[in-house]
Amino acid sequence: MKSEINKMKFWTPLRLACTVIAFGLLAAFGVSSCNSNDPSSNPASANKSGAAPNRAGFTTLSPPVLQAENRMTSGTPIKLGDYSGKVLLVNLWATWCGPCRMETPELVKLNKEFKDRGVEMIGLSTEDPDASAQSVQEFVRAYNVDYQIGWATREVALGLMQGRTNIPQSFIIARDGRIIRRFIGFSPQSTPVQLRQALEQALIEKG
Image (cartoon, rainbow, N blue to C red):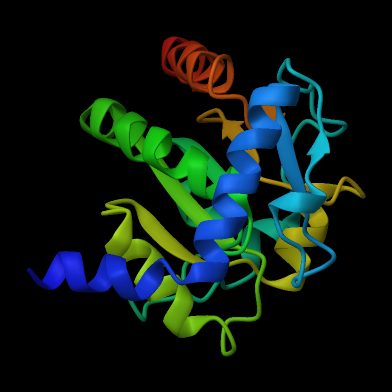
């Protein structure tokens, strides 16, 4: 009953309308994303993105990205550098982004499938942590997110995005810190399959 109440609170008329629009855009374009530079954006402004995973324009995470402390919903900040030696999936997202909301259930499935195999998954919102604290907590409950959720610092967001500000963005990072794949946008047909393939590749490689 409590879970149902939380879902009702989360799904306001505006969020529901935005999600309906986003589904329509996904049906039309296949792959969709939001511009993270505009927190007031909604899925109606979603842009078509490349259907295939993008090769990152950089091969490893920079020291500022690795050492920045990201605020987490758990209350304990984390550094991406703490995950050296592990396969890591980092997802940049926001509660107001329709494609991000549609991608989240797939990420939850992937986490259940790969966490026992040593894959760590972290979702970092690009929103202001103080202004979005409640909406992020509601999001976690509504979608039963069981991987780590928090907020990307400015250093981490800018360092990962490298000028490409559309979200969602996902990064598959190998045990040695190399970025194997970068995904921009979400396609329900191709993105989950390609994420799974990239994680399998990262697990096979030696650290």
